[in-house]
Length: 398
Ligand code: NI
Image (cartoon, rainbow, N blue to C red):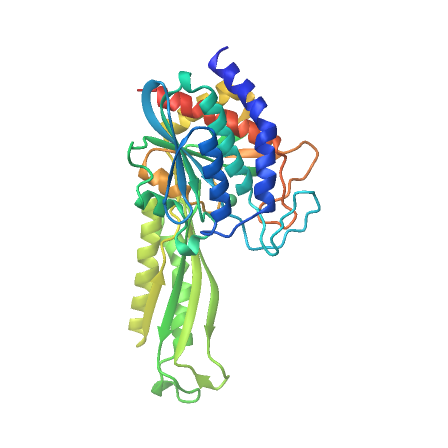
């Protein structure tokens, strides 16, 4: 059998088993950073398959190491494991058994797919070049904690042996079942929140000259922040600056002591991201200073823009087309505005992230983070084929 025939046959054999694992994980969703049972299941299955397991990569993160029989590169394949704190409303027979907790973003599918990839790769290890590291990641959904990817990297998951490239995937409602899609360059947004605390001097509304009005200062800051996109960013680049909260004051005839602004910034390029950050901080601090008050900016860099390496994208696209067929790879045109901490892997080594379709003809797919979320598990078979094919091809390019 050719490599492709082997991958397709072994995936078909593994798929019912993968679906069972996915349903078990779906029944037992776990919060970001607390994926203890899930990582236990992963470690057990990997060991049963005869795969070396390394644990201790940030809370529940772990890696499975598959050494091929032929020389080659080391390729990381990433699968996220966490669920969301929300009540499931579906009525299928594998509904969540944990009140207020649900796999509503398909990470149960991603994790099960990772175990399917492990099984298929072990079945064809005598023909596998290089080394594959299966990266099972905690806390993708928890941007406020910094996510899981950057801490797995900090804890050395890309070392010994050093990972050359990482490939990742997310189940995606806007692509057809049986397809994958991606694009070179920016794929998903960087997402950074900020808080601006303004201090003035409280006083009587009738005597503003004796006070320093933080409401007025804040108004000038909100207005000036909108100059960043229009006056500081190249018109061929993109950025969003949105103020979602502007609070201050408690009475109509009192000038308050303080006011507070909260907002979010979305960018698709690291240079633009840093430029916006510099402008937000400078505009807030200097505007407040010019008007006699003070502004303190708490600007958090959470998930950077997810940028696919153009060269790895081309190779991944060729691999996907080779295993699935020419028309089952979708060239994605526009990046998605959501954040995704695979971005940290893509910053560390040249990498590519893909979308895995589950839309069926004539049906409206349920969007992620919806209490009725579900997907057709046949998508996992497509994902396993593409992951395995990409690993074999990328590892073999010495
Ligand atoms: Ni997700």
